[in-house]
Image 1 (spheres, rainbow, N blue to C red):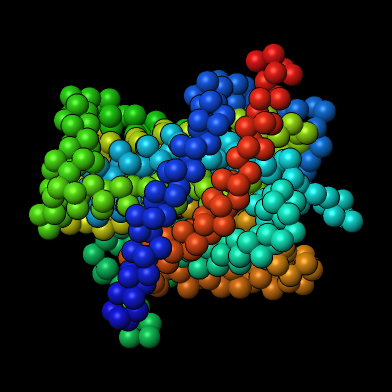
Image 2 (image 1 turned 120 degrees about the vertical axis):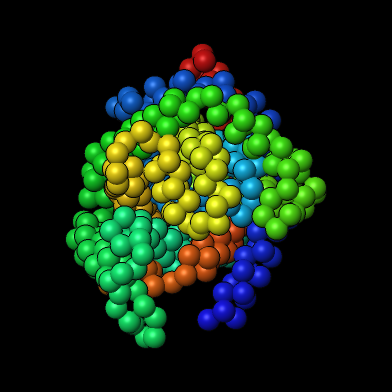
Amino acid sequence: MEFIDTLIKQIDDIVWGVPLIVLILACGITLSFKIRFVQFRKLGKGFRYMMHDDDSGSGDVSSFAALCTALSATVGTGNIVGVATAVTTGGAGALFWMEIAALFGMATKYAEGLLAIKYRTVDRNGNILGGPFYYIENGMGKKWRWLAKAFALFGVFAGLLGIGTFTQINGITSAVKGFFDPDSLNTVNILGNDYSVCVIIAGIVMTVLAALVLIGGLKSISKFAQVVVPTMIILYVVSCLIVLITHISAIPGAIVEIFESAFGLRPIAGGIAGISVVILSSQKGIARGIFSNEAGLGSAPIAASAAKTNEPVRQGLVSMIGTFIDTIIVCTMTGLVIVISGSHTKGLEGVAVTADAFANGLPLPGQIPSFVLMVCLAVFAFTTILGWNYYSERCLAYLLGGHKLHAVIYRWIYIAAIFIGPYLTVEAVWNIADIFNGLMALPNIAALVMLSDVVRDETKEYFARTGD
């Protein structure tokens, strides 16, 4: 098992090496200049479009529902466990690089949403089909269909073996165990390993609940997301705000630590300092940032393509709001809470880092802080499981032709992956997710760069026509 974990980590280090980090940042920077930094200039308009539907548009769900579906897949363990993992392994500076990636990632997400609407298609049954595979095939031409299929293949595995199942259920069960059985006093031996009874029960309960919701498809998921996602984001943000307000005097010191670590001025784990810190911090920060907000992955445009609008730019503006909410707001607050508490330097792992930060930061008695975190993490991760099932099913449909039997079989395989997720090691789970995220990003980033002139021209035409 140790050999497998080591091998997975080596592959992760190769996939998420300097070349991919530079490629993702370069894509966001290039798009930012081509669209004249729309992500900053039109941020307010994006929020307004998010709350007001395009009445003349065609699609399966409202723009708000499409955004909530996308957020249901992005606001998850990446915001709670992912941030903790980033600052633990890459130092507090990882948070800085996560923010930088997000600011340019908003331009990337804008382009993804725009292209998703522009190149979406309707099948013979009247179903709207869209996402990177369609803007690759329809925008770049049939000769690039192999690239679209590569994206779809990586998307299936990302949903099944990474971001959609293992990391989410592992985060949920770890949080439940940390609250109900932190010392593993009640265990069951399975295949030679001892697991807390809480892990087993939580895993079974979440698997059953996921199976019940997944049967309903996209509309069932979007209805669930529209109610649950905004409510839980508000609860989580308020909890973080309470910590920050009650420890406001510590915020300047935390910000200094973040910047010093980001630029190699402060050593991290193992005494690593200098340029090595910068490389490790940027690698972990960008990787976890992409895991969290999925800008560049190509997943969000699958949901965006179903939005009721005929204006590609409009949906692009709504789509970029997801990155702003996910990383600039939620991840930033998580990171600050962890750095202020110093929990990233205590040798803890995964959700235990954030749990320790909340326990020390929230001015609430007893186990209430841990309970609040457990509930937020469980709901966030559960909605991510649902959202990524939809994403990976659409990838599978593109590969195999969209037969209902394929979808049914895949859903049961997906549910099985949820069931076994709690029994994998935390490090292996996150490394597997990173690998498939990186592989999934490659064909999508290539398409965004090659279609960047289309994004630029659509943006110019829309704002000239609307007078904005």
